Structures are given as C-alpha cells and as structure tokens.
Length: 551
Image (cartoon, rainbow, N blue to C red):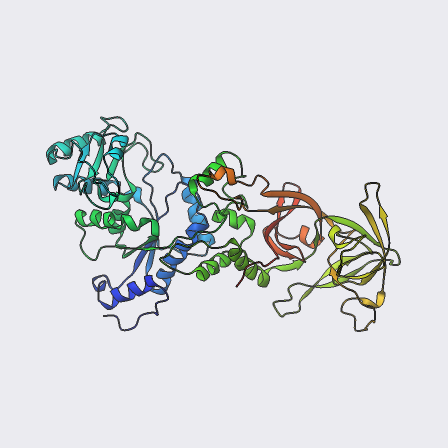
C-alpha cells in the first residue's frame, strides 16, 4: 500500500493512483514504467508532442522509467535516418529517456511466442490473399467467414510457419493469423494477421528474416517483454485494446501485465499531421525537407525557431482528455509568442524599405536601445544613427487615411529610440511610388533625454540606419494547408503553393552579425530567427506579433 501519492491532474493519473493504492505493482517495487514507441518511418511531428508530454510527465511525476522504443516491424519503410531524427527530436524537447530499445531486437522472442500460439491452437497459417481475407472479415453488422485453412492441425501449422521463416514461399503466399473469433463484434478480433512474408532486408537485422510480425502483435508483446506498466496511446487504438490484451494473455506473461489507456490525440486546425502525406511533400519537393520551417515536424519547428518550452505549454493548456477535439492554430501561436516575448531580444528591421533623409542632421552617433523591456533589467545596447535611415514603406502615406498615426507630409513621428522628425518633402518616381522622404529632426527630442520637449509625435516607427544597415532576405510563412476543406477533398487540393514568401529588406548590423538560430522580436513586425544561407543573411519568420487567440 502506498501512503502518499502525487495529486492526480487527469484521468490517466487517477487510474495510476488507484492501481498503486490497490497494491497492483507491489511485486515490482511500485515502479511505474512507460514507453514512447514511434515507428521509425518518418520524423516526429507536433501530433507526437502530446504523447511525449504525457508519457514523460508520468515518468517524472511518479519517479518511474521510460523506454524510447522504435517499433520497427515494417522494413520497407524504416531507416536509421528516422531513428536518429526521433532521438534528436526527443532530446531537443528536453526529455531524458532511460533506455533506447528496438522491437526488432525481440524478433527471436516474438517468433518463439508465435510457435507457442500455434501449438496451443491460438494461431494458424492461412493461404488466403490479403484481398480474400478482407472480403471474408465481415462488416460491423455481419460476422466474418472462417478461413478454409482455420482447422489445420498445430503440427501442420508449425511445419508451414517454419517453412515461411525459411523463405520457401513468396510474398503474400501465406500469413499467420491469430485464431480468435470471426463473429466477434470487434472486427480487430476476427482472426487478425500477426505475421506476413516480406522478402525485404531490415535496416538493423539485414537478411536474417523474411517474415515480419504485424504491429498489433509485436507492440503489446514488446510492452510485456519490457515490463511496461501502462501503455499510453491515442484514442484510435481504443478498439485495438481487446486484441492488445489477448495477445499478452495468450503469450502467458505473469501479472501485472501492461494496461493500455487511451487519450484524445492532438488535432490542430489547418495543420497536416500524417507522416504519409508529410513524406509525400518531401519526396515530391514541395518542401525543402523534413526540417523545412513550414513542416509541422519537430525538426521543422526547431528550424523555424519555435522554443520547445512553448510546445510543452501548448500541450499543458490543451490538457489530457478522452474526447476528440480540434485546437485552433492561433492557440499554438499564442504559446510561442508568450515564450518568445520574455526571451527574445528586440531589434529593428525594415521589410519594404524607403529612404528617409534628415536634412538638418550632421555627423553620426550611437543611441541606446532597450534589449528586452519585459525582463525588468533595463539593459540597453548601442544602435548606429547617421541621419539617413530606411523606414517601412507602409509607415508613410502621401494621402493618409483617417486616424493615420504614422508619417505623412507635414506631420511628426518618432523614430524608435532616436528623435522626432517632421516630413517636409518627398521624391516621387515616374511610377508614382515614393523614392525618398526628406525630414527635419528636432535635437531636443532625443529619446532618453532629461530635457523635456513640447514637440509631440502621433506615433513611433522603427528604422534601420542607411549607412550601417545590412541587406537581408526575409522568409515569411503561411500554413501548408488552406482553410477550405470539403468532403472527399484530397489534401493536395488544399496545399497552399504560396505558403513561403521570400523578399529582401534591411536589418541592423547587430542582427546580421549575430549568431545563427538566435530569435529576435523585430519591432512592430514579428518574431524572426536569424540564419545564414550561403552568403545571404536570412530572417525567417517564427510567428507574427498579432494576437488573434481569444484566451
């Protein structure tokens, strides 16, 4: 009996507490053991973050153990590239696992258990094709039809199964099926296939095997072999739970055996979260790779500059529930924005530059610029100022709309951390676009000056010094999927072919000379990560400044 247990904050923890109080795991020293078992056939994506947070959360809360296990039972699609990417993603999230394991290491044990099934009458070799098995499985309202090979003797089945293992038969010629109940109301229990023939080399096992266990067979047995106490998985496996329990029971593992508990998976509106489709985007060159900043993979989010702490907070806000729901993308953006607001340095960059010349300014100086007003330190750095700057084109209007608070002819505006300037004249090109703005500055309005000035400005705008500013490439992103979704619509019809926008502007030398992967809040623009592409300085958008999430 456990005297003191941590307070349960969700239904999973309530179940664990009840089992601990009942003494279910006393024979194991009340050690809770969970696992995170991805298939190494793609990169982890944001949908996996919830499972990561739940499993590692249980490990930490109950001082238990967690196995990172690669459920690698499909050799045609698995590779070390994906194994390494999964390990990197888990470490980037800040999680520490106790053991790195592979289901493929259990192949000998799984085969041994399959022979045990056969000799005890719980499995048989079936010669039906995949199409015939599907056709005889029945429907939700009609029972399935027994295979004509269902009543083979254990001895005959064992002989055939060993011949399958020896490579005597081609792919698809035979399968090993569990012998359960073709009339079960749960279709998963209607004699599912547990082994198939596949003359494909395994990325770890080489050519040792030409038969491979199915996921629904290998997964529960791997849990049982590892002594997992709780198999925490998403809701789509709920109907597989009776098969999960049957597979472990017939293998003869002693109590306590693993318990499967399902939770609602993470669904985010307007976000593609299928490894199959994500791989298709990579293979077809729609994105630059699995780590493209537009991709919802963890490596894509890392490359975009999303802090892992923001993903953890997002999952904590979404919570652990049994009911299916879809989360707004804006909620994720809000978590990213909250985290970066407290950690990212402030800087200035101009996306669509137009030159502003101060006609009465001479020389140059360095101005104090506050690094991050939210940290309370008041720390500043120096920003060069030489009397000619670039401002964003949208911060000037020849014919301003009502309540316009930026720069126009005859009006005043404050240059952030610098001076108030008044627009006196403009140079307009033959195409009607403003080519240069001419202003007067007021020396007594220097930011931070102890001298108070009666000169007022309607607004504050950011800028980059024309002499010291650097050329920079901007990359902005939209979701890969458009908002529209209709019945029977293929995902390819929803892809936004303009999801990445690349253009050029100006940034402070401080940013251009800064380290790669450093995030900045570009004043009045958004959060961007600085990186280098060849000889080009790049500012890649992480998230906008706009908050459209209703808390």
